[in-house]
Amino acid sequence: MENILKALPDHFYCQPELMTQEAKIKANHQLLRQRLSKRNRKMVLRIILILFVFAILCLKLTILHK
Image 1: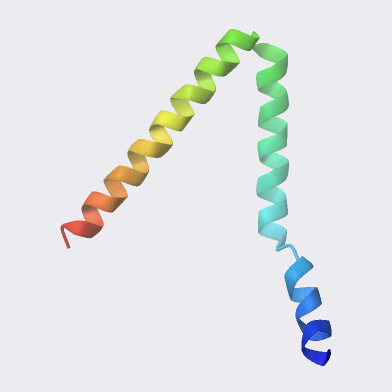
Image 2 (image 1 turned 90 degrees about the horizontal axis):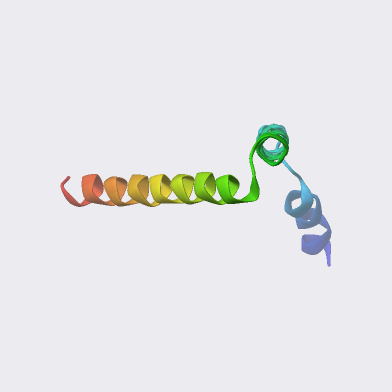
């Protein structure tokens, strides 16, 4: 029981850095919703997803070549 009580704050603690990143993401999402049509928002999100996948693949390739 003591271990659970000690681990509880660590489980729910959110680092401040993560909270600021989450706030930035929400602000950018709000800007996207205000300034772009639904079709254009989907296109932007697809581009972001493609870039994210590309970055992961490049990272994997550099790790494999080491």
